Length: 239
Image 1 (cartoon, rainbow, N blue to C red):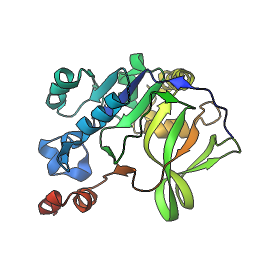
Image 2 (spheres, helix red, strand yellow; image 1 turned 90 degrees about the vertical axis):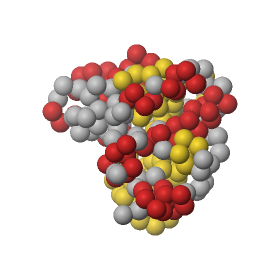
Image 3 (cartoon, helix red, strand yellow; image 1 turned 45 degrees about the vertical axis):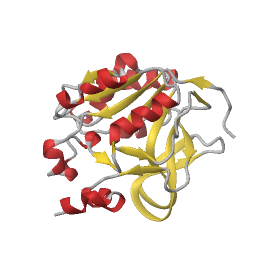
């Protein structure tokens, strides 16, 4: 089993810069993270869960319609960081924009919905959350060693654990990923990469472990159709 070494979370970084094209026309007027779901704004629900878990600092990285997130600073005392490259780059640019805050950090997406509070102030190991697919999936599937360290990531698979939800980086992971990002940020081939894809390219240097969850705890809405299945209010928004 993986080594137990309690790590105190310094902060949480919520990525909220993207336009979410698959949510058009809803996202034409409202960023995905600010959509109400079952009566709660997506990102506010996540912020409240982080605060309830005792996470001392929350950073929200914005881009598209960034001014619409400004009220969060007053309401929840979060730190807002604007990503100037969100239109030209993938989500690694939001990590780069928040680089001064990287430490023992939860890395979250504003559009995840946790049916229960999965956050804790103390974490055993740096990890990526995962759920199990019994059938085929096009998600990022994970292979692990005997210590549950992630040693392989493939796009698509069958009967596999796959990435879904939050990650937790310890200070060493944050330092190592930032070092790689600073070396490669200017390269044209980096421009379209998710931070997860940069991680996949450097598994020998970047250590994350598998943290598993049962079905129904971590939800991610990739389209309006998926959102409408969870919240019937959005059925009228379907094309």
